[in-house]
Length: 106
Image (cartoon, rainbow, N blue to C red; front, side, top):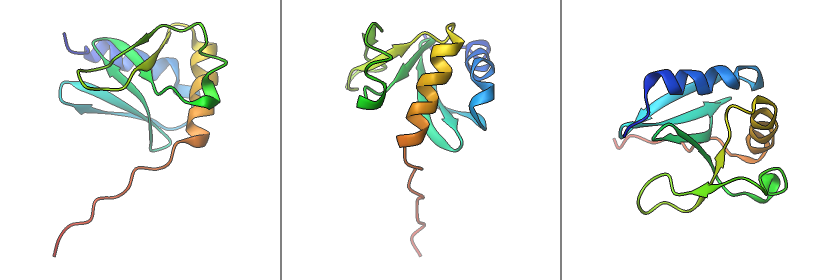
């Protein structure tokens, strides 16, 4: 089951105050960018975040899962808990690098 457009728009609405938000469809699922940094992976109407040390305390009671076959295990973010979501995203945004730009071959 792929993520619905309604759900991805709800996710973006929940975190709208943490910065510039956009999403990109990728293979039927979505990557959510905060201030142009890839922060959330949304698959099957579930929000996933990488298991990083900076959020381990906040996410200690969170469920874990695999966003897709072959992926590393991620935390599942309760997007309905907007306070927690904003805190986690703020912490992640501070340590997440900008994606590397792809160079075109000449």
